Length: 124
Image (cartoon, rainbow, N blue to C red; front, top):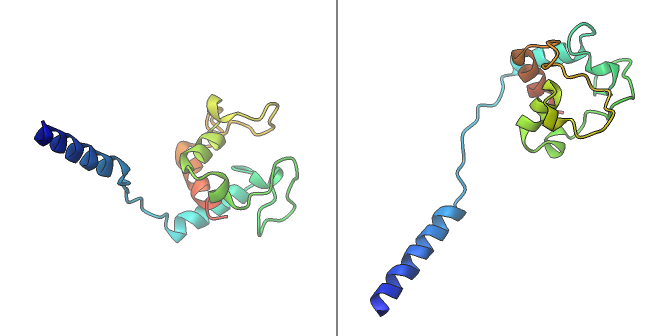
């Protein structure tokens, strides 16, 4: 009986270690060229047009309808949630009466452009 109890406790200890050990995935950081392209798209009045509503460091004539784009990694620890917000998924639209257009959902930006813009915005 004591032997079975030792096996059980050992198994629980091992499983607890396995469950509590974080699994880290290596995610490639975007290149400087990708970030620069994202900045261009964000500042472009005919594409991302983020400056129409948001203040962004280095941008001229920003709007003030949306929040300033600062500390984005802190505000969106899960980068995918920022992508979803820009794309315009139903789940990401938590602010009622938000003025933010669903850029992906309405075909304003491609998925690739949204990812590039997100890579840039995530550096702010």
